[in-house]
Image 1: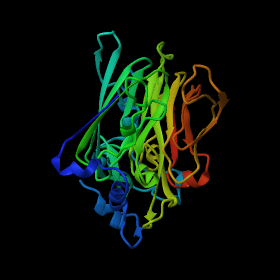
Image 2: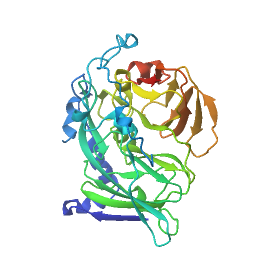
Image 3: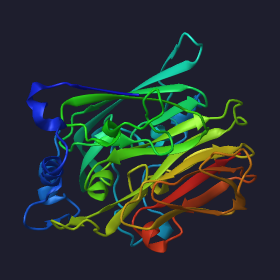
Image 4: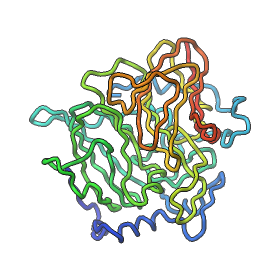
Length: 374
């Protein structure tokens, strides 16, 4: 079920979809007749486009290492390894984001079915991906990636989406698709929501699992890499075993975008947006406690991304749609839009790396560490 309404009369013509809508998006995403070169200070011309678990683990905010940020031997010579990105500048903390699950506003239908109401607002915002490296991003609720939404199988999901950014788009919820009461997908589902307009998506969550949501528009790649993506976790009716739960989204960004180039090369990689964040600030986890990672791959322009864990193996649940693991391994490989659940336990204290198993990705920011404590 989908409801759409205007927020601003200025956008009266914005609902007309077709070549005019695509041209508008192309203009919003354009970097002009010359290429936009991003040094370690800005994205130059692109910067002009930007304006200004069901039960959380209490105490997870203290999981960051108290050690001051700095270099370790394995990072010497790698780009962006010096300095730090202040979470106050970006307006979000990549670590706190891992355990910040939005369970929505809960109510009940007359039938007794649980309803969860969520709000997503898209805006233009400058985000620092590394010290001195700024992305003119498009984000949901002021953060990159967007909120980690959480529900339970059988819930009715209602998402109010307000588009305040300069790119018209709708939101695709992957395997969870808004539909009308008869189950027929409405054409409006895929019609871009103009700037200053609002839409309400409604659907049931019939299958537990981990789902990505992302912008649906044209050109897709040049929109989504700038931050219009997030994760929707649907828990099984019988909760999984208690664990330390961490949500991680693998993403990347080019540092140079030429006008008309829909497939630029990525030059900076990260989990939850900021390169080398968890190498400089290792994630504290205790020994002998189950760790559950909800993993999604939002990396554009590369065919795959991966998660490799040192000195351990994990149960790998592809898409999180089964309670039986698909594999017991140390490496998960995902294409764009794929998700998984990883479960593991460390038996000995120490520092253990986790990172992309493509050396190039690790060299450019996708390198992290767990600090396992007794």
